[in-house]
Amino acid sequence: MTTTWAKPQRPATEDRRWRALGVCLAAGFISLLDTSIVNVALPSIEHGLGASDAAQSWVVSGYALTFGLALVPAGRLGDMRGRRQAFLIGLTVFTLASTACGLAASPDWLVVFRLIQGAAAGMVAPQTSGLIQQMFQGAERARAFGLLGSVIGVSTAVGPLAGGLIIDAVGTGDGWRWVFFVNLPIGVAALAAGLRLLPRFPPSTGRREEFDPVGVVLLGGGVLALMLPLVQEQQWTGRLKWALLPVGGLLLCLFWAWERRQGRLGRAPLVDLELFSLRSFTRGALISLSYFAGFTTVFFVLALFLQNAAGYSALASGLTVLPFAVSSAVGAALGGRLVVRHGRRLVVIGLSAVAVGLLGIAAVAWLVPLEDLGWAAAVPMIIGGIGSGVTVPPNTTLTLTLVPVKRAGAAGGVLQTGQRVGSAAGIAVVGAVYFAHLANGGPATEALQLRLGAVLTSCYGAERACA
Image 1 (cartoon, helix red, strand yellow):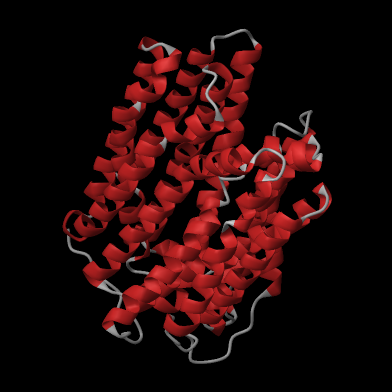
Image 2: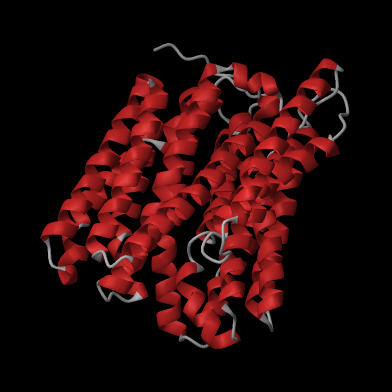
């Protein structure tokens, strides 16, 4: 397979590039960690702050919402005004918001600060992929995306474990505060290093471009209308919430028409629709959407199953998925090295390994007593983790291969927005199936197996997108 690699605008000093990448990975780690670490802290938030069920729901879903809404506009802002500045501003706001979350005196303030924290995380994320596009090329770029994939896999999977350790060490009353305070030293260190190490690339366009506020409103409204009923599926009763889905679809169609108009008039669009004429970008975005619709929900349902059906503590539940986190990091580093040689075939191999791992977990849940499930699931967890590692980073590398560097931030924002929407949709659909099965008197083991079957379906859909 022959692959053309876009060149960066300006090479950075050799050592400095990799140290700058370390800054980006540290920021990416804490922003993605906060998508899962808070889940195990909800009982502590309820106990220590008196948060209602609705407030707890918004602590989790509000972060996901604003994270997803900020990605594309923030990516475009970085493309226009410089990714270094956008990255440092986003990281500063994220660190301050994390501290404010830990100091929150009421559930309402905690929700407000979580919304700000999520928007800041959404500002950081596309700058990371854009900076990688600028600083690296060829095999080095693939290796850098491999390291980013390691961080994505580890931060997502290790979040429940880290939260469980903190709650166990500090106690239920104030343990939730330290779940947020843990971001402070990492954020401050990353800021100090970023100010010194991140390259000062000029804005990537030769002329000063306008921001396209109409496009921001249409895209933001469409994504919000799609995600809101999904992330609030358990809290909003009744069917009226699903009326937002066609509204979201209509707004996204209007966004598409508006962006085409911007292009015809020679104005800079929020998203360059010519990106979707690149088969590698469109195919990779579909794979990412399908995969994240299944991948992230594994930990959601597995945590519920282990704690509610098997009687595991939050800490023990987190330890169960540790083999997946470690092997995912190893697989991502390996995938970053092999993707240049094997291309899209490597993604297919990774998806197949994930499917084998999920089948193994389903078999273990059927054959092994619940009290031994954590140990027995270690081997299929390792297989699935390696598969995930050789799926996500290579797919990201191949998706952004032909994207012009000047559009790298917006393109990364589009890719990650698909991941956020896919994750929200997967959790909503699969959570509904899981809870409905339990409500009808079905065994928890069967409910888990139904969930794993749905993830296998999403893996199959991602494989078909590779074809």
